[in-house]
Length: 94
Image (cartoon, rainbow, N blue to C red; front, side, top):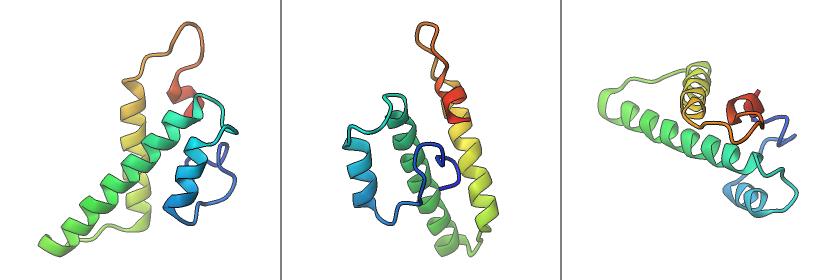
């Protein structure tokens, strides 16, 4: 997982691993919403890519999907204000 290597060292193999990771107590508190956002954004982009391939015969490369995922996550994280004087989720993402 390119975006969360600081949080998750290895690529998750299935959805059950991610669910256990999110509900586990080993993560820093700021990592949980970020992992959820990455999962939601990836699911959305995969579904959108599937629909584009089925209904319009247009496909996007893996690099294009990764760039779209990065842009989607950054845009969403900008909307979350930082609490108190702690770093924002966007700073934590980097």
